[in-house]
Image (cartoon, rainbow, N blue to C red; front, top):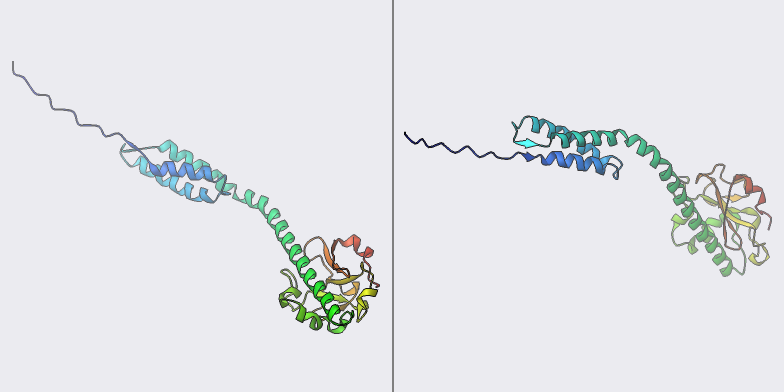
Length: 228
């Protein structure tokens, strides 16, 4: 009986898990935290991974992972409009708040400059017809006469004309001194030239003669003091 040598069986190389499939699933899950941004990439990689696994002749595995990544990614891609609808109101509110803060800071600077002018002019407030020019040397930057969201003009505020050249010490501290207005540089007057719309979305900002800043809504305008 002749011995026959049986040739060794070829080694079977185990199939590798597709890295694209794993990446697709990870990016799809991260879509929850990136508002769907990473899900776009995950969706593309998931489709590519499924094609490569199917055409690999068994050398690659992970079709289920790729399918899961594609489904999860697609889910978050379709949810992007929902994420946007949720974020837009918050962004709008943040923008309004930022504009309100800028307006308050501008009026603080202007009313402070007005009082500094008074100190340098024997207690007299500036002439209402040229108040911007008068206090400009006491204002650090002309940008303080403006704030984002206002008119594209040179000044977004006005001076209470009833305080024209008055002695600061004789003005009631609660009197409006600086207020929002669309009337431009050196604008002065009263409520009639006050900004006709709520530029920061919900309130008006006014600076009083004592240097304090008040925010009032439409219904509170009648409570403002204009007579010194």
